[in-house]
Length: 151
Image (cartoon, rainbow, N blue to C red; front, top):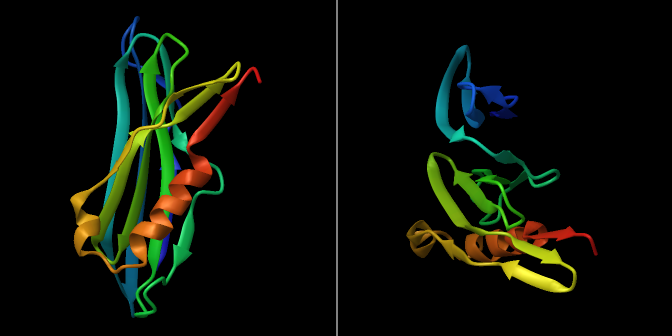
């Protein structure tokens, strides 16, 4: 198994707009044959203000929570295009084999003793997932959901 996560530099699209992308891939090698198992691509495009898009440091994990011999990999990233001080969107992506599970929501921005944001929603894919997956994903989400400013 080969897992690659990467992101581009911020690029100028036009005089007034910028963009940034991130990618994640898993490849499986058997003998001399390598095939792509899955790919994730997300982006912020046509942004005239500040871009935030990047993997959360130390959020990448490889586990076998259900002990079935098939590894799960999980990572979290944040994204936004905004010209104000507000919370960024956040996504948690988990794969077991080619099956994708996700949690999407908004980070909590803690500023001057106040908290803003904090909404999140697990995808329906967790409804049919092994019982260990959602508690683990929620625990990972909670580790990365808060961004503190000027405290």
